[in-house]
Length: 399
Image (cartoon, rainbow, N blue to C red; front, side, top):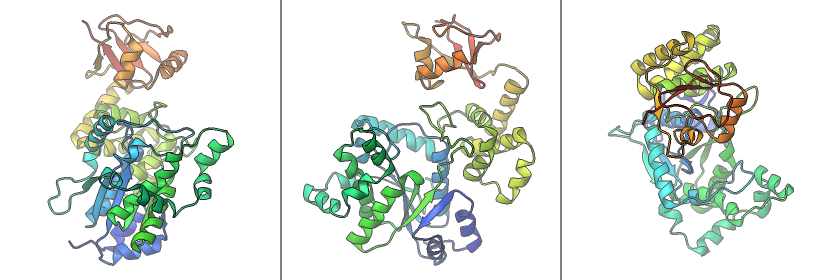
């Protein structure tokens, strides 16, 4: 298959601001993309949960742009490594998942990223692979051979291990093996490049080391940013109830983007839209409300289409500018125990009981009649509408 070597198109992709670093060098990768050679490029992820947000989306958008240039792109699911869990950024070991949990999570991931990649392309569709196919076949002798390429010092110097060591927190031996396994993915696939976030650079470089030593082949590591809040450094997080999640319906996604802090307009514009970079100053000059709405329209349109994005904006304006209650309310049923908070967590309206108490303390939970709820053990009557925070509405079903 012929690749697109248009220099302007390639430089627009590399220089937009999503990619922060390319190893061994940006210049070498640019030359490789411009050479006409068709590259094999992959992104890997352990499906440890179903929570994907816009910081995940930007990586798949870059992968799709590389696919559109004519390169072979691969989406790797770590069905084997997910049983261990990546220690990156962790102060404790991750819980190990069952095979069924992993299968459920993979199905959810594929559904959520489907709008971001053209899986229907007959000539060059993205490939989906699972690392259990090769990691499950490694013998103990082969694992020892992989381990001989790294030192304990290299592992213990990693930020999260160093911190846990100093705090006398346990570091399990299987966590040391994780970079070897993720690195071996590059060997098994014999890739030319790997796309990853900054938190995965160590693991990606482990793959570069193994690929060079075992196959005599170089690999580019394309590192993307984590789209942190430029003021606070906070990342999107399901456990903290922050961020814009890909499973959200159009109206909720639009509202979540509008609820992002004003300083997130530029990161969202750069990472999650493909509005022309030269329009950034003009966009920011519109003021936060209009700028954010334009970004939200583009992002929601990517997932649900332009018509749905326009309808979501109209709903948002009606609800939050004009003070109306949305018509398409999420309805929830309470169980026999009448546990409102549990039902809200199950439907992903809130992240935890801790968030519920925080919202109560902030006076951020009200009825549709604007009555503030102050009791954390509040029991709603059937048919009542609750406004939770700035943009979440639910209606309690009648039995």
